[in-house]
Image 1 (tube, rainbow, N blue to C red):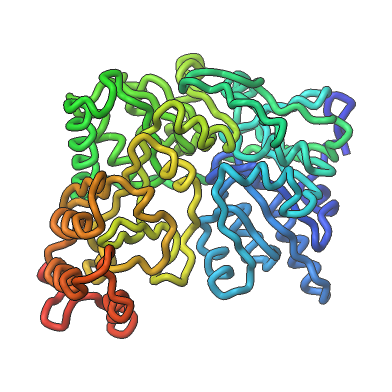
Image 2 (cartoon, rainbow, N blue to C red):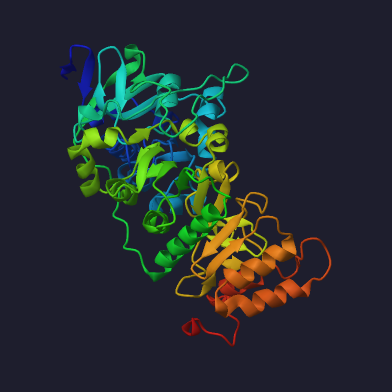
Length: 503
């Protein structure tokens, strides 16, 4: 073993993994694959396989900021090394293990995770594994492309393993704004009054005695390339931009506009691109969780003036563009801990407009964003609840149909509810826009069916809505899931006399 600056041991990933024991809880850096450790979790997965091969139990609790890359969630899931997992995931192997009941998973609002870790609700954190672009002898750790919950993991963990990733330059110092609030009853107001305001330091300060050692790596983030926009996602984006431009013209949004929060994925990229291209919308700021490729393009074009988030989730080619022009981007980008990027107090104060994606929506405006057919977890609620419940305007988007037209995303009653009608103000599909503000349940149903449902399913949805004529919300407990049941039995939500080819 060598030493770094005569202070920290240099460990191989396999040497670091030897410190991990069965039953431990580990807090890993990472929010999406951005900033997630890579060499150490792969070594822990190898250790798990070795232990299993000789008949020993070896499983750990895994806590992260959000989802991670294949080197973390994927490797550990394939090694059957995860006893329980929170707060969010997007790995197919881990998802399968969760849905088979082999891994315990509990879904959490991302803004609440660090506080719950500090309270001890999840038990003790034995080891924090943190990816860094730099570490100093006095315990200053500079994160890489995300912050997530790393400051809290570092403070609460008994020991820390630093994965020093030389793929990321030391010059990232200054990109981050590390601030950890006091806990109730001593908490003070979070002093963020605009997207650009800095309130913390550029590094995570830890007790250097807690650092077990340093594992060196040189690996890019495992961020997959996004698909090109298709006609459906492009139309959804256009509909969102049209709605926001109309709100601005009607003076329901201040003339200087408001910060945007957008979820992750192809629809989110299409939405942001459409907002940037709309001549009726001025250059805007973002106060969000994740900065994606489209944000960088819009920043280059002058359509986005500043972006605050907790994760720089960029394809490797776009990330290299950022690194080659760091001075430009460090004055326009800021990465915060997730309990600040997703903080309800700040979101409400600065008037964030939230735009998130649904798996399905019902005709009254309730949203399912986590479970397929009500039972199989997809990814998790993530930060959508943090923003939806506290935003200036809350928007949900989704295609009106899925699975080649066999599934209607607009249903009589969602099969799992993550966001209730009380939090959802606008629903947008490629078919159109349903503005639900100030409308009763029956008015909402008419608006959603007319403007958002696919033509193949409108007639049945209208018939369902007319079936129950009494009650404030016209819901039939007997028939509410007839479309879901039809899909589960036939593989198609269409009525028997309508095929998806008609779509």
